[in-house]
Length: 266
Image (cartoon, rainbow, N blue to C red):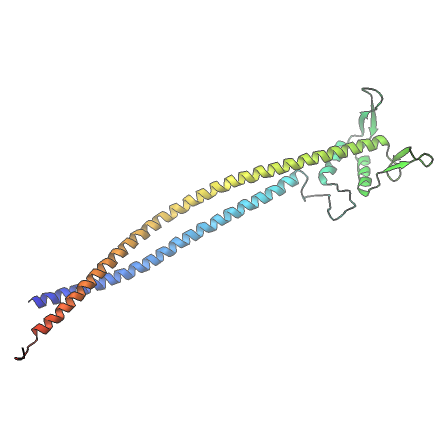
């Protein structure tokens, strides 16, 4: 009777070992899939993070270009050609500034004789443009009297411009170049401010993305943890069942020996 009980328990444990072994295999497969799902989500958010950083970098670069073009200091419609050494080094900014300052047909300047005395100097777009062409060509220089080397007869290759016009033109050039320096500093400041603001935006966007990633991973990681605990529990149960089965198999084997007929040999 005892042997039959041992045999019954042995068969029950075999079934239990088979079930636990199958369960262990299933948990292994599910954990593999879960690990792949977690890796896929992490990869997706890592890609989004990289795209954010590239987008921020692109915006910062484009902002510098935008501010430069807006100020007339960029490549857009730029008159200055760095490969042309004889062009006078005039940028679009200076050209526009000078053109704006000298667009009036006459410009008043102090006469240098009385405190409030002024004289009207003929200018206008045509004259200022022609003077600029000569300036860029390097011909806007003083022309002297053939009989008196100290007397200036005019400015330009044909002495077409009076000393007063030259004075007005050079003053406008100096003012335009000063304005350009100020514009450059302003442009740099705006670019710096924008880049700083984009950096702040990027940090906030990355924090939000990280929060979204945590929210997406939380249920997957919780499920993974539960599965790992269940797998560990199954492995523990399986090890215990195998140990008991081995003991029962040994007991059954000894029981078979004891129940075998000895034919008077014992």
